[in-house]
Amino acid sequence: MSLQHALLGVLEARPMNGYELTRFFEAAPRWVWSAPQSQIYPTLRQMEQAGLIEGQKEVRGTRLSRTVYSITERGLAELRTWLATPHPPPPARDAFFLQALFFDMIEPDRAASVLKAFIAEQEQLVAEWRAHREALLAKETDLIKERLKSRPAAEHDRIAALKAHVFAGQIAVATARAEWARESLRLLEA
Amino acid sequence: MSLQHALLGVLEARPMNGYELTRFFEAAPRWVWSAPQSQIYPTLRQMEQAGLIEGQKEVRGTRLSRTVYSITERGLAELRTWLATPHPPPPARDAFFLQALFFDMIEPDRAASVLKAFIAEQEQLVAEWRAHREALLAKETDLIKERLKSRPAAEHDRIAALKAHVFAGQIAVATARAEWARESLRLLEA
Image (cartoon, rainbow over all chains, first blue to last red; front, top):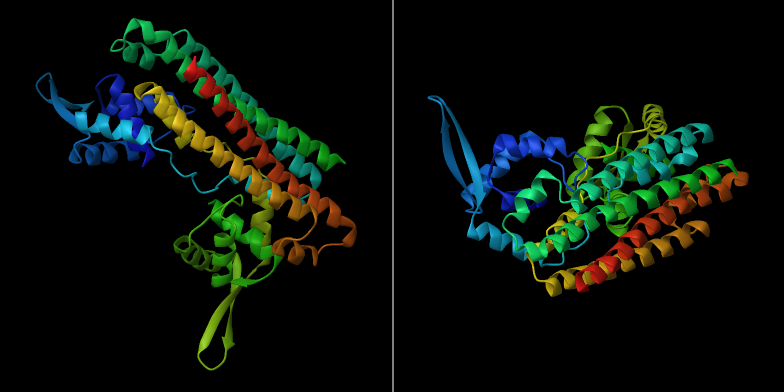
């Protein structure tokens, strides 16, 4: 289950409580993985039971207490094993391509409207990922700042470049999708 | 829920029973949408209750009976409305980019192995989609043959071209992903 691995990867940068993790996912809806609060808390409890993370109650004032989770040795080993294993491709489930497959059932100008909205949306995603990529290359995101604290300085550039490159991948995919949609518009008009 | 729309789109080509629909999805795991049998039967029941499809019991011999589902006017209207509506992008959930994001935590040669497996997998997908695209252009898949029976002959080429183009889109995305993975390999070696 990938949310577990996303959480392990984030917690490897620094311990966080459920509220901070929820905020992290909310603030980055276009990161590589998204998760609503309703999934995060139960997943944290399962991961704690499995020994992948460790919760520590933090008492604040007289009544408030929050559980701060940190990754355990076992969690780190699980994450590293998952990272080093090739996984089969997920089942094909592309709602937009599904929609496009039946465009012959609606009028061409209605299909064209959907395609134009899709192009705008992909361009918006590209802009967001481009900004995130730049921030990573500049080592300016909160997460990379935390993470680099535990890494040798000589590796900082390489780590930032590797992470930034993932967003170059998301940009390449969204660009390919937008270009495909532009070709579809030409095909509809033909 | 996109499975409903996938089923409506398939049933628009011709009425089918649950077994045939399950076989269709099993035979096309790299189509635009995939679904296991465990999802198909309950979804068909929900769709029948909602009046989107209509089941007709087909008695075969003295004991066997199968329910053949066909799309209703209401189902057709629902499908057309969905097709003509721009939908927001789904939440970002790309397990492979998530994996790649943490490649700095494993040895470069282990990350390289995962990337090479990914490239091979994307190339395999490209080959499958290319074959499917050719079959659509030649109007040779079972589904397009059924579908074209209810369409004017003058539109056959256009319909086949539109559908084939969807798989050109899947090919473009997989090609962009494979190319990105090749760049990642170069980055890991640097």
